[in-house]
Amino acid sequence: SSSFRVPVLKMRYVAAYLLAALGGNASPSDADIKTILSSVGVGVDDEKLAFVMAQLAGKDINEVLAAGSEKLASVPSGGGVAASGGAPAAGGAAAAPVEEAKVESEEEESDDDMGFSLFD
Image (tube, rainbow, N blue to C red):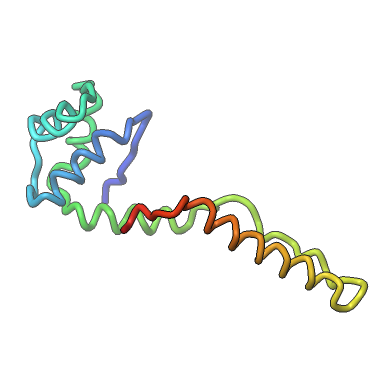
C-alpha cells in the first residue's frame, strides 16, 4: 500500500479537494480545484496541485480521511495534565473566594451583552 507523503505541502489544495468531494464531486479535477481556490482569491501553484492530485488519484476520500485520523490519533498532542494545588490548609477558607468569583463573573456577563444578544 502506498503511503500518503506530503513534502512541504500547503493544505489549501487538500481543503479545496475535500470541499469538492463533500459537494458531491467524487473525483474533482485540477480545474475544479483551481475554480474553488480562485473563487476565494487564492493563487494556485500548478506543481503542488499536481502533487496533491497524484496522491489522491483513484482513492476514496473517506478512506483517506479515515487513514489520516488513525495516524493523527497516535501523534502526541502536547502538554500534560495540570497538577492540582492540593487541599487548602484551613478547611472551608478556599471555598469563599471561589463563590465570590462566580458571582462577579455572572454580573460581568450580564454587563457585557449591553442589553441585547446577537441571537435575538
